[in-house]
Image 1 (cartoon, rainbow, N blue to C red):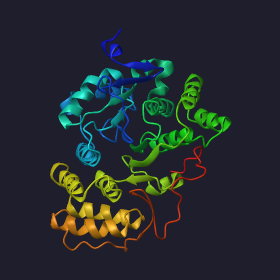
Image 2: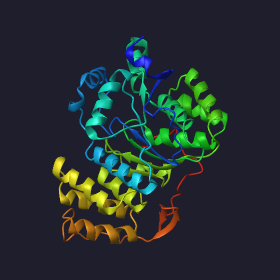
Image 3: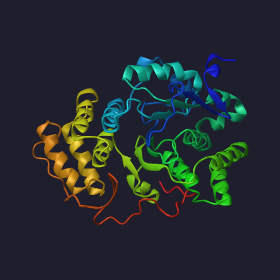
Image 4: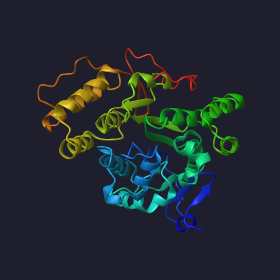
Length: 358
């Protein structure tokens, strides 16, 4: 038995490492789930060469997606202040093999990030010739991992999820939502899973896990990092709950709009992009303008954040949005559901998972 197997729970190709303190029950009503590959780290594993490179890199050599560490740090700070709790409820998921667990934990330590758990894919088992095609098939693995995570959480938990456009995360997270909410009947779900090459034994596991989780939708918001430059319009079919972002500054702005971050946190993330990753003030101005033009950033938030970002030398002093920000027309708690003039549903009644028009 490998050393990591003594510390992990393995079910099919899902390997889970828990770092939750002993005898500590996770009762948080808001939990964050972060994909590692192309969302937190600039990871490449679609090929054998990429997988081996990822597996042999030292922790200090692993490159962050610009602003990812600062975004997690500021979310933790804001959540701790808001909740009065110290244990920040964040989990990570990766298609990297469990043999990388110690290196990834060391990387998180260097970044000042303390996950409560990480899900790995037992991908080295797929290096055999007849299984090589499974290296980059993530739908079944991630759905199973997410359902396993759901079973650990409070019955009324709200999940804020981060992914990217390189691994079908919008499909996976939306399917997870539909599975938990029982929006799809058995035949519909089985057809979709088969279309995404989920093997029969994993399909059975997913159905079994569905029976064990509460009958409600735990997904509050989904952020998709456009690592592969997918057109943001593609994501309209998934509803307004999904926000495709060009960078973590855009994610921070929306998180600020929903009161999960404060304006000073947005400044920290923007400064990190400017000082550590070579972004310019003009690029950040284009990013905020893009959110306004897409009907994502509302009038109230813009009136507060834009002058503040100018004072802090984040945006050019002469920046003016190319279109007028719209007023908020619907909120749920602190979350902005829609702006005036927007008609796309928050969660569609039906998502066409089987046709990809990118």
